[in-house]
Length: 264
Image (tube, rainbow, N blue to C red; front, side, top):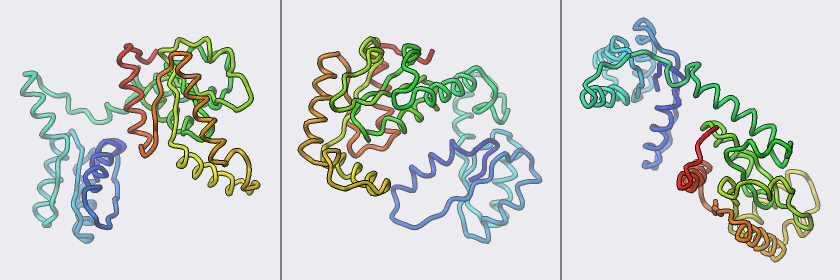
């Protein structure tokens, strides 16, 4: 994988493609490749490993060097961005800037993502409730329903996200109940999945294995109470069972789009 930036764009595409194949594979990423003199070493390495080179490079000279040296050394290459940029240029009747690093540059969007990540850290697991109202999204649910990972992922997308746990025997905090219900998403899991996750957590903590925290019937009741609260408050519920964080985030954002909730 060769990129003139971080390589995140192509890495995601490559991983998605490789999921279609039942084979062992390794990914080596070369980032910040912006000059033709950097190319030879990379393509030679690919030739030794009998590897495929996938690249996202906007500089036409560097892209041409990758293609040409790949052809010379018998290394197959795939240009992920070039054809797309070309089609967009034709469609818009405009010349592309061909400037690397724009996706992760110091733009307003970049600083918004930084603010969102800091917000998510400050408002993780019910912290700093007094400023929860500033959130774009608030996640709630019982313990171990992936509130924190999802909060951090949404923050990386630029959404100020807080998460507040629903604890058996305790009333939900007033600040959560006073949130605009359109901003609150309840997370849930299939009970047996949640029990398995909690059991693993208990083993990690070397805690006693037999408690109501991992008792199937208790967990079922806990989930039912949480769902009932969500219905009463008008909060939408997302079941993350069998979903990756990215898939759950897509569903959350789909629900929020219905109410045109955008990053602050």
